[in-house]
Length: 118
Image (cartoon, rainbow, N blue to C red):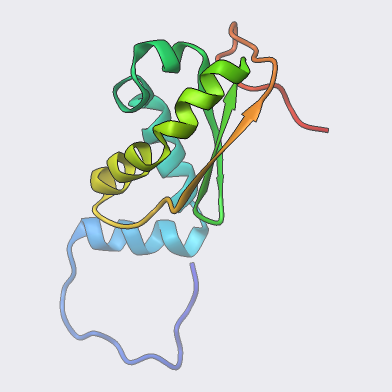
């Protein structure tokens, strides 16, 4: 957590939700929370068929990287990119994702994740 010596104190109480949001932002955990929520609701966002062949992998600088196991499903997700961005941003009531990038990779389905990059 950062100490803000130059800033004036607010002089008012804030909600727990606001305090947690500021703390997560200060610790750099914003993207971890977003990717966890996106992974848990991926079936609703992408649809059952596309979710069965893809995994949201990571978020870097507001770009969601999705690992896909076949070019056909990657193409379908590319067509749905704007819809997926809109659903995620509506879920968080802010622009947490600005783009979706698709990577075709062999997926590790037993561990439900993309293999580590080298």
